[in-house]
Length: 72
Image (tube, rainbow, N blue to C red; front, side, top):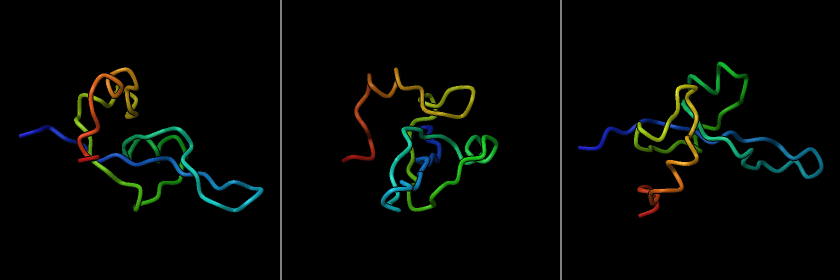
């Protein structure tokens, strides 16, 4: 069984268009709330716990080395 953790994309609103867009960050609920980011519950997914760093965000180096399991 995989050790997975719930993560969310940080979503920002483009002031020019009003459209939601990914801010380039993905992290745990706790990390996003701590750092003042709004999270979109619809942008939730799961990833291996090893991909999340000590701050609660994706470790991009580990993510790049492995395929996205949730893309299957």
